[in-house]
Image 1 (cartoon, one colour):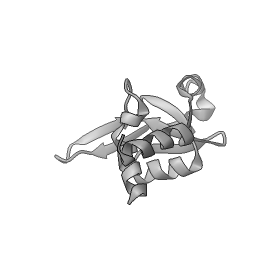
Image 2: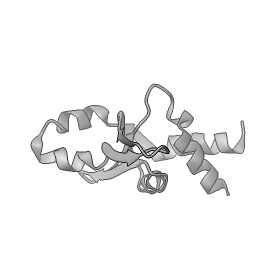
Image 3: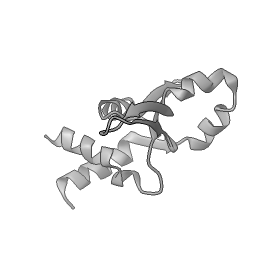
Image 4: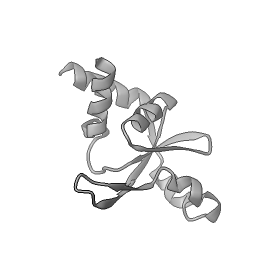
Length: 111
């Protein structure tokens, strides 16, 4: 295992606390929470060709404050909700350790 892979495994096990997708789905149906939830679940952006694209979270994870800051530096959807730091993960169907953003963070902290 490479140093980057070891760092990623350590980050995922220490800094990604738990999945909260079900909780966010339930609470997003309540009008009083929708504005806060939108902050970490959706963003309009522009791709390399100048076309407008929607970035939408597919999963939601409670993360540490440190990881929230790292994810934010990498342009990820993050926000605070009910006193928790939430990452709106834009990928799904693979282990978090396979996400490109995890490699980006691991590389940044190893350099």
